[in-house]
Length: 232
Ligand code: ADP
Ligand code: MG
Image (cartoon, rainbow, N blue to C red; front, side, top):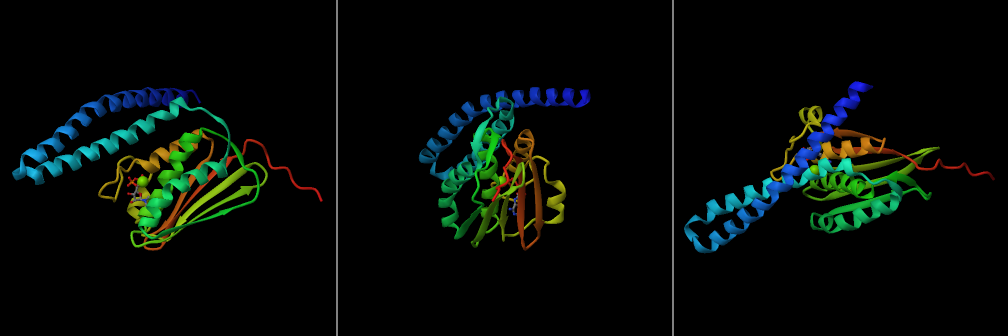
């Protein structure tokens, strides 16, 4: 509707402003971080204060970086992409982090070509966010199961399941709001950004979570070309 159009235009202006501000904040931040490190070598008596300053600067930097991603959906470039290829690339990047915390990533991929109309970089961002959350939910190790299957005839369903800490009802109720995080070094922007990116791809993102049992994130995306039934 017209109302929604106005709203989405407003959001896009806000997004561009946010990206601009975020970009401007990054340069002074880099200088502050550099001089904080330098002071640490000169003022042994203040090291604990300087460590706090340095950690807080890291935190601002993390939030600013995620904000810039949030604003990027306005510069999307859609191409025909092989979903499995994008996913495998992301998994190979996250494998190191997984191994360090004893997490096993298992992939179950249906043997069928799944081409989607997508901005590959943004989808990578989504998969990184969601798989990282799964790994972070299992500090003592465990298994992340990633499955891709076609939803005959014209969409594909991707599930990322972990056997981690799960979410409390209070967190589940707040999902989608910015800055909701239970992590010391979290930003609480990952899921919000991921949902927005999936929406821009005309897909859906659902979360099923049980506290103490695990979480499953289900993403569906439309296929660029419908699957043609095999005729024997
Ligand atoms: P962040 O990871 O920076 O905290 P996210 O938006 O990615 O931000 O996630 C928000 C919150 O949702 C997390 O802090 C965590 O409490 C919860 N969460 C997300 N994914 C999972 C998961 N797989 N298992 C348990 N909790 C999760
Ligand atoms: Mg996250």
